[in-house]
Amino acid sequence: MAGNSQRQGAIRKSKKGAQIGSGGQVKRALQGKGPTPPAEARKGHPAARRAAAADRRSTTSKARPTRDNPAAELLVGRNPVAEALRAKIPASALYLVQGLDPDERVTEAIRLASNRNLTLLEISRAEMDRRTNNIVHQGIALQVPPFAYSELRDVLATARDSGTAPLLVALDGVTDPRNLGAIIRSAVAFGAHGVIITERRSAGITPTAWRTSAGTAARLPVAQVTNLVRSLKECKDAGLFVVGLDADGTTQLDDLEMATEPLVLVVGSEGRGLSRLAGETCDVTLSIPMAPAAESLNASVAVAVTLSDIARRRRA
Image (cartoon, rainbow, N blue to C red; front, side, top):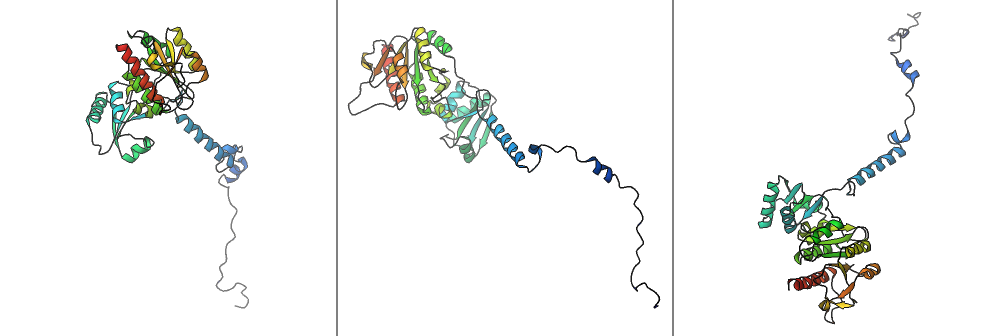
């Protein structure tokens, strides 16, 4: 026992034999992983995060309404929606708040939308508020494409072929869409043949303008021009007199002798009124007689008063 050098209880391990092959691991290791990918393609790299953020911004910008990629809009309010459906303007879906108490306008809108095979969707009031940016929607909205503006030459041709003396309304920098909607509503009510607005520094036909117009924007052509002064000169060349509303006008409304002639009525912006160039282009600047206590009228109210008086004279 003493001569036995192996400790009792120990386990003699056999010497491990030589491995046969590496299973391809050495060959793959020698091949390498290929060229290093660019920083933008390496997950977690700051350049990759910046590239992903830029891609998200690009995707978002493509989804915004642009001249080349217009996005659908929501026209809201019971009168505007019903009026737009009566006028058969293009539309794709009618949204209704769940549990909505319908009146005759809602019932008519549903009937007209069903007749045109438009999609009818019931959504929660919270979802409707979100989709309409919390403007007053009265529980109903119509998904429509962006407003289709007319060319000025087409508006002039329509006015000339109407059988009555042409009457247009031009807006010189009116920026409030509610004023624009109200002006369109008055223009329809008093027999105007079209409205002219500018592309820049002017309100466009937004859902708010649609709603304020009570849907009458579907009945009246609106020309969007790049240069108002040049467009007014085009109206002059077509035989129309240019009359500008101005608190300091040289002629009062009561004395407007050309009321029955072809006219384009120009109204200035809410704050500064007529611009200098637009005023110089006018044949006549017109003021509305008022009581001394009143300083001025809202742009849309001034247009309504003037158009009403012109329509009265034309009826006579």
